[in-house]
Amino acid sequence: MLHTKQRTKNRKQKRTLPFFFFSFCVFGLLLFLGVFFTQSALFAQTPIPSLTLNFGQSNSPQQVSTTLQIIALLTILSLAPAILLMMTSFTRFIIVFSLLRTALGTPQSPPNQVLVGLALFLTFFVMAPVWKEVNEKALTPYLDSKITQQQALENSSQPLKAFMTKFTREKDLGLFVRLAKMERPKTMNDVPLWVLIPAFMISELKTAFQIGFVIYIPFLVIDMVIAAVLLAMGMMMLPPSLVALPFKIILFVLVDGWNLLVGSLTASFFR
Image (cartoon, rainbow, N blue to C red):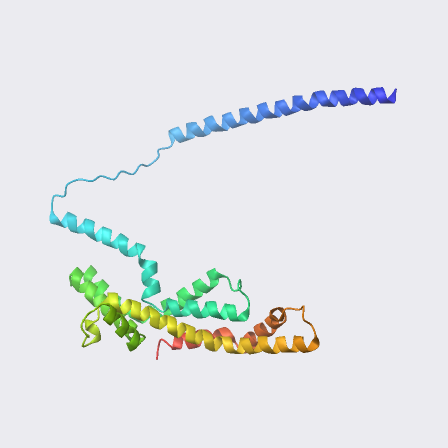
């Protein structure tokens, strides 16, 4: 008797489950249609702005000049990251910070966003006098219509050339002068930017790796000491880098490493 009642109950449950599932699907479909038509009506009543781009014949040379200026401005904005990397102190900062992170043995800390952000703000700090001079000698007079566009470009390139020349090695500059097959320049003003920029880049790379080598030495000594101690204790299976990591971090914190490193890197551009 009990088995019969249990079978009857199971049959009722099997019959009601498809019914509830079907009802739920129908309810969901009706809800979706209601929301869709309501949103469609709202979109139909809300005006949507449109953007049109027309190409026509210019009526004056000023219109052509304005169009070319807009194209040049968009080109400069698209090349702004490359300009920031090639013509400023960003390269030295980011490479030294990356080598420091590798020497500490923490490949994920600080994160890339933190290192790039710190390098960017330090770059803004170092390049502030240069950009101020560019603004005073080129941008502001050009916006006030006191100088032409060609003069503005020449006046803006002079502070940048002076900055890059100060930190470019003569050997690196001579390399690209020879590769360009140009005559030996008498003064730095005779060196074009397309020759000075790559020379400045490889000079900055060499300087950054030299600083990174000096930073590596104390952490390398800690790794060697920890490895020798573990080997003497017979602890072959314990990775030395795992044991040396807290010692390297505490050493870097005790000597106030970030203050020393950032201060030394920034001061190297104001010598």
